[in-house]
Length: 178
Image (spheres, rainbow, N blue to C red):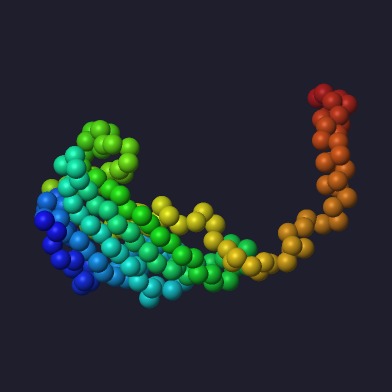
């Protein structure tokens, strides 16, 4: 039985097992300033995360959460140190389990959500999924820094070493031992 989706602000604390048992769907927005770890990384904390989650029992009677969380985060470009907007989309496919042992026995298609009995922090789970989907380095698509800024110098010294990588070993071999 599918209940109607909740189109209100996302609740922070939920009982994921009851939600899955009832087949609830949650659609809403989550302010980035409620996500402490992401909030420290972004330049604009007024952004909202669009969240669509479906709690259900799958065909194997495993309590699951499926859906996505999506946002546009403004972070610092690692090349020019100016702001850059990075799209982040997390596809969520979690199985709700009691402990590590139950997590080990899950089918490989699921990531575990180890949830205690009673209320659990939904925001923390969404934040974890977004963090896993952030790019390792954020930068502009266009060339925001000229290629000459990456050069080390004249380049002659580097060319000599590159042409004979064992030159340094030869010098060490010829030096007297102390």
